[in-house]
Length: 222
Image (cartoon, rainbow, N blue to C red; front, side):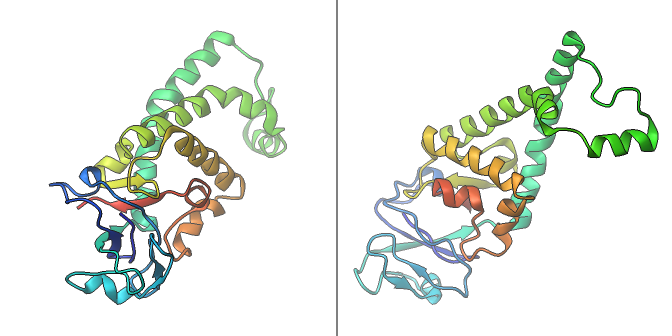
């Protein structure tokens, strides 16, 4: 089923709705998670959908008459809160394991003998290569954590606590290749000064760079 509307979304109805919404609905397609005041397109025929359809009792595409189901879309702040929860989980688990590994390998200090302000200035001049090598285990475990949870249930622990779900264009948890592409998109978004993440605040479909690359959407569970 597809979606429309920031507070409410329209999705094509191709199966009966389960007791808990997204996770138990067989969707035929998801297109156009947009703000309630902005238009979207039909996931079946790509015809423009007026936002007021989300308020109708039996919404259908004006062009192809495909039935649509209202859904809610997740905004920036709720998604950011879920991300912080996941970051805390990864810091306590992957971060701790990374520190233990570094303690065992005992590599030379990146900043040498620098202290205080000198250490801060030296940190600003660091080559990112050695830094990335030091934190590579954490990055690898974070990618595995995100990719597995997204592809299995569509929800990380942070998403589950805040009742969010990542879905593909058919309303299902993303397939492994799509989840992997979304992980890569997260890295690219961070590399662009986090603009790939912040784009959620400006995008009419509330999607970041990673969502556009992987063709995913973040919706709110009922």
